[in-house]
Image (cartoon, rainbow, N blue to C red):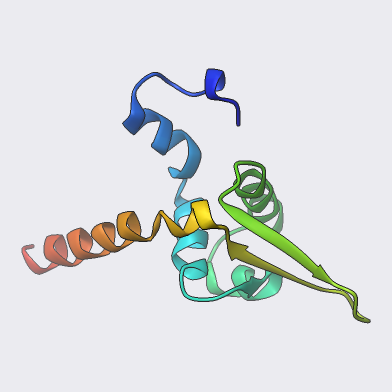
Length: 106
């Protein structure tokens, strides 16, 4: 994504890049290890193949994740956080803590 395509507000820019439900859940999984496409699809209950593919492509285009194709038969493709993607871990951790606190106080 280009800088000029982002909102002026930094919070709005963050939401635009990582704010969809599926992108956040993809990032939640990738913060621990690389994942293969079918692993992600099985772990994200309700995500369609198209939405997962589109979300992964957007995250890759935005430099948040990398896609590695291994020269094997059958081909093996793994998705992992880039260095920029690694910088999202504290945000995900804060969201996890907030979610737990919210549920504990209901």
